[in-house]
Image 1: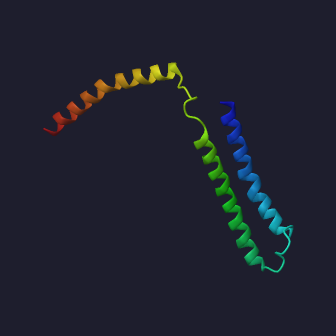
Image 2: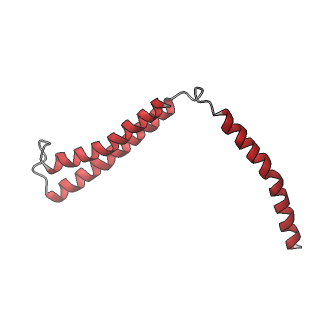
Image 3: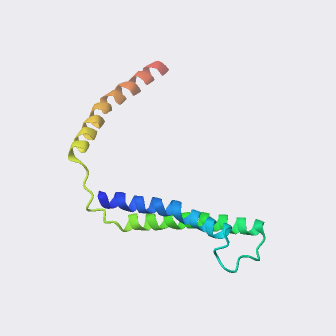
Length: 106
């Protein structure tokens, strides 16, 4: 579980740091060769690249999640028992509710 939280934390940090770094680099002329662009073009390009970087981080996070083995995740037995009991308990009530709605319609 700690590995999943660590991956989520790292992905979240990159989702904040990458677009801010891109915007900072464009606004402070840290990227060479972009001084000839108009301010309007710089704003559009930096915004587009910032959004693209966030989408790339999300895609990488999804790829990491898909590669994670699914057989190592075991559900909590207490949670399963409680969920099954809840489903069994709600089944008779649903039958009674549908019977009552049929009677009301008639």
